[in-house]
Length: 160
Image (cartoon, rainbow, N blue to C red; front, side, top):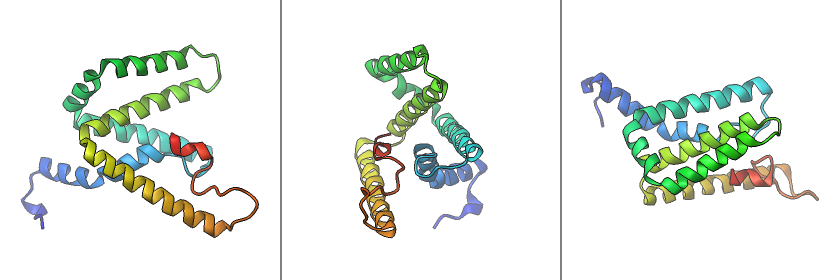
């Protein structure tokens, strides 16, 4: 058991950030994915996820910069995706561009924070939780003529 009274302010902040980190990463990953939130609430959730990700990256900025610049082909690929989205004339592209950048930054942060074994464990846990929740939602709605949907609004949202 950790005695919180003996910790310095810096140690206390680090202690609470480490405890909150999985929850904060979950917010970044799943902001607005499961439910159709009203416009202002969804916008607040997305802005909040950018702020959370910004502070998580700021917390480990040296390691983030190192990881982000180590894989030049990946950096070029992300740059091509950003350039391609920016080149498009389709409305709503700025939101897609922000989503690409957020996903890239989150991926780089996860590479900084967790080793490959821990990443696989996280993926296994997330997919297990998603499978159980989807099964519960499907059973709660009943098995009718429509295909089972689960917790996602669309079948492709798991791939996001």
